[in-house]
Image 1 (tube, rainbow, N blue to C red):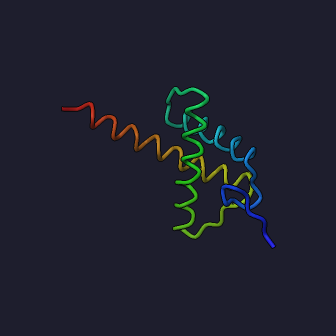
Image 2: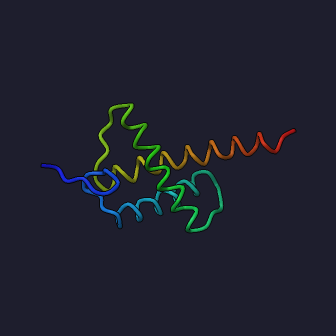
Length: 94
């Protein structure tokens, strides 16, 4: 029987999810050449984990454990920052 944690990720607890969020946000910051603080990296990383998890679910790619969750979260966070920049750039034009 597989145990699920508060964020519905098997094998990843709350503290690990915070660490994953921070790492994913930091990775996304570096990939997109952004400059954010620690709190923004955490928020972007955790939001990215949900986006990356949904993308993996649609593509039927299993995401479990620390490293797979980190990869999914980093991909989701990069996509979120990319979309944010795209929308922010459009809002500034006009």
